[in-house]
Length: 167
Image (tube, rainbow, N blue to C red; front, side, top):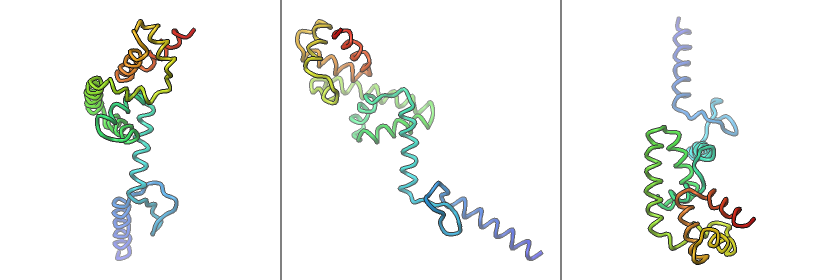
């Protein structure tokens, strides 16, 4: 009987230790054979899940760039934050959509700085071709239109117009 109580107590203590010890994948087992990782490994793993969620979502580089600027974060953190909101569910996605709208409206007010256009591979010749195609007065006007399209999430439309402008 005494052996049975000791065995049960050992099992309970092992369960308590397993519950309170992070048991995520690690390079090697820690003391007692439990798998352990420090907080930075856990954070990196969770961030990777967030990033994977972002990359498998409908959100684009330009959405993340908008939100990074709006939130005052670097691009990777914004991508992880987008992924985190997706993982948290529909209510957080609705909030994310509102953030994205607010970010776009803010960026449209500063369209003249061509901040996002500067991150593209479009050339002056591309802007000139698009200006002619769109009926803009100058290549600079086309650059502004490209910037607005990037802000609004319409990068594919710009690429398609460029294909049509350069047969």
